[in-house]
Image (tube, rainbow, N blue to C red; front, side, top):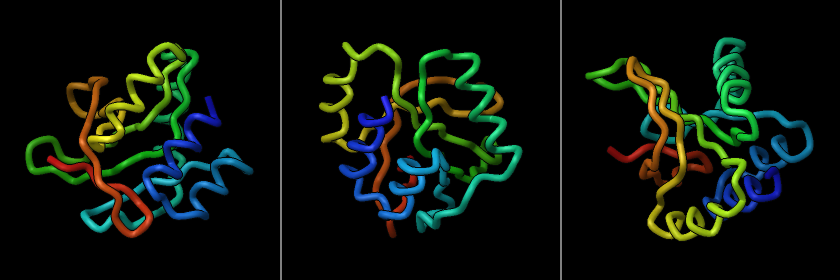
Length: 127
């Protein structure tokens, strides 16, 4: 799963340090604002990841996008790899259209595809 996540991160042209930290240290980064600015996770954000991975055994979060919205306030998109390898080829096809699998933490959490774009080595969600 980690190799698949690294492949996706490279495909998305994420900043090399973000990829290296994930690969070598299991350290996650988040992208914020419309500029894709990169930050390390706070303890609270890391707990969101831990809770998600514990609740959805076999998933692997590889990046977070934090977006401030008018309707929902702060939205965290936890980008992840699903356990079922049979779905990976399908997700590779989605990547060509800049669609990634995400668990969106909002007042009404949901999992699905979101459209993203690479900016400044980070990612932003396109609405």
